[in-house]
Image (cartoon, rainbow over the protein chains, first blue to last red):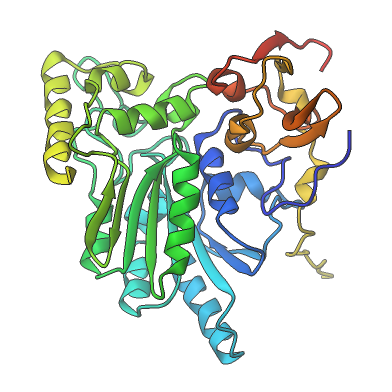
Length: 290
Length: 93
């Protein structure tokens, strides 16, 4: 067998077998060209792709700290400006912990400055890298190691933070949401985000095998179900206006129980909890139906 | 005290030295007669170790799995629209 050709992200990384985030990353890479620099926050993606002394990356790639990937990207952008290079694209990658919580202030600063940088958040709905602690992206009812299910607890009782709305509140020209169930949708959204002259944000639901307690072959299936139940619709905002949605007039949502009952992290939900989560999906139907 | 310097840079794509094939307990086997060459498996492979290649048995590009890196997650077998990929126990790996 011939050696595989050099890629933007090579095999030989240490992500779990069947990792949903890596499915999403491969789709993001197909939307890039070789004239791209990546700044990466701390997280699974950073750790699994750059086990010292190796790197899986075939693009210029830098990691500094958990919180400052956006600021590092701003620095790269400033250096490119000084070199009068308006062509090279800058991409930031972070997980939900680095985006929703730890990096939020510095991401906000990058967006305030209006720099032409694409930020991609791989949303696994917990701190997967450090052992599935709850993050601002953890949804209601999910069991994590800091919100464990038990006789007195269903899991997390907090609502998932609406990061897309936070991005939109900064007046971003492009903000979108996708899932690992739709790789072509991800690639297309990366291309469209890069066409925009200004900051852009793409958030991708990335099923986590140990975190969600699902089987190795279920990441893509779960990504699809999240959309089909309207819990995580495919959304795209250009200049603040929703211009494409997976929730349209003819869309028939599946019951959320179909999605929840296949995941170990939601094993402790009562009928009442299921009703509450169903109401969240119903609210999405109302909010995003075009 | 003599300090040794730590190298903070590394070669691009050097993870190719890290063959993850031995992680595998089950191996995907593609039935090329049933495969329609849609390339979905190549797109969703988290390892990107499925390449669409010209084979002698078909004018269409068909997926070829690199078993040096395949971790045997079975995503390709699960998602194949024509069920042309089956998982077999892989003791030899």
